[in-house]
Image (cartoon, rainbow, N blue to C red):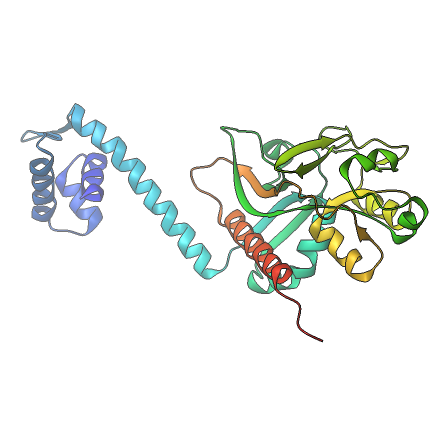
Length: 304
C-alpha cells in the first residue's frame, strides 16, 4: 500500500499512478480507501478536478519515502552480496597484525571474494577515516565513545612478558613483580600517544601499572621484538606475536603466573545508516579468522 500511496502523490492522480504501476484504476482507488480506513485519517483530499495531499498525508508520505528507501537499499545490498562483493576496501592496521594474522590467510580471503580489492595501510596512529579515505581500522584497546564511529569487537588477546634465554642467563629471571625494577625493560612508544606504554599486571585480583622505562625505546613492533631476540631486555607483546618465538625457544615467558588484562580488538568504521557490504565482509572474515586462531591456541597438544 505504501508504494501505491507514494505513486498517487507523485502522479497527483489515481489514473497516473495506476498507469505507472500497471494496475487497474479501481485497484489503486480501493487501496487508498482501505489505507485511510485502517489509519482512520484522511490522506488525500479529492475533488472532481484535483487531488491534494492533507497534512496527515504529507507526514505519511515522508515516512513512506524513508521506509521504501531503506527497503531498496537492503535489497540492493543483498543482491550485491549474492553476486559477489565488489569494489575496493581500504583498511588500516598495525604491521605486526597484518604480518601475523591477516597476510597468512589472504589467499583464503581472495578466494572467497575475488571481486573485492583490499588495500592495507600499516600503522598505529590516530587517523581521520573520512579525511584520509580509509574505510575501517583494526585497533586494540577500548575505543573512546564516539557518535561518528562504530567499534565492532572481533576478538581479543593477552599480553605476554618475555626475554631471550641469553638475557635471562646473564641477568637472572624475575620471579615477582617488584623484581622488574632490577631489569632492562625495552620501552615501546605508542604511535597514537608518542609515549611509553606501561605494563599492566594483575596480582591477587588487583591491577598494577608498571612503568616501562629503560635506556632503549622503539616505536615499531618488529624492532621491539628484535630487541628481545638480541638479548637487550624484557618486552611485553601480544600472545599471537610471542607464541611462535616461545615455541621455537628464542624467547622465554617471564612472570607467567601473573595475569594481564584481556585486550579487545575492534574494527572501527564511520557511523552509517547502511554498513557497506565491503566493510561488513571484512569484519565478518577477520572475526572468523580470529576465532579460528583462538580455538587453535586453546586446543590441547596431541600426544607424541
